[in-house]
Image: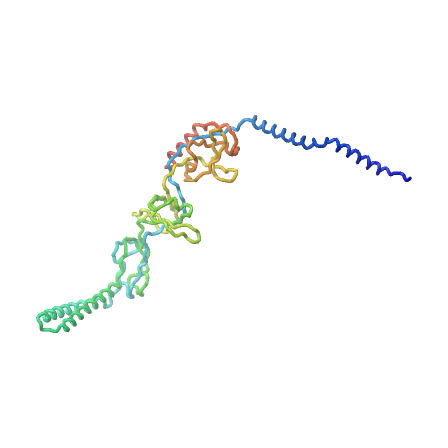
Length: 380
């Protein structure tokens, strides 16, 4: 009989030993031991967290004010009225009583062309009308006395009407030589010289009405609901000049490319200090709403990336309030959407998260004083 090899004997021994260990059931405790170890570690971490000292944050209950929402848009100034005056007939400029910058009233003479026989045509038509009136009166008396047929009276009346029309046409043709101001304003441009020859339709002068002057811009569809005609507005010109006006018109048809709505602000300008065509920043003021004034440093981001502020509730836990930016002033941010009585965290808000329990302490008196000054001064 052949001898059994050593490695075969070893394999058989290992197989028998493994079967005996499985039969005992001792291996089933390995998984439960791992679970118990994980639970012990979690309990230890929770205990350490509970025993750790609470983080201290500074809180303040800021004052609340009534503040108008500020909507800032870019724009430019423009004349309330603008007209380019042109000749209605060809001729030679005989009178030009205006210069650049001249103040004119409605109906004032701007330019006059040489009559070139048109005055004589008017006088001839006037004399003919007088003659036809006399003939018609005589024919009417004769017809009433029965000395003239009614047909001859009708001819006389028709001739009178024709003479009257001829005079009106001659006067209208003469008036084509005269150019007058259509409204009160200032002469901004003169395109002809005295004695120069002009064709019919040639530009003579440009007249502007700058009182009021308009500030034009476009408001977004998101802010459209906050403003209406009659609301106050502030305009800051590119040269630093600041003026106030009133919203006069808001377009009801959005610009197709930008989905914005045209806005016109009327600015009193009796002295003409505000020119047309100047770049301007327009601040539209909506109706006042209850707001809170806070320094810019308190604004932070939530875990979801929303802009807002952190506060402490009645159980000293951190809560987050999304904000509505009402205005950005020199003294701080004017915010809406913060409930009344909220304890706002003004120091330490970047080191905590929503749901954390903290140790809130009132901010120092100097911080509170500054907030009060900002609320009562800078937001007026």
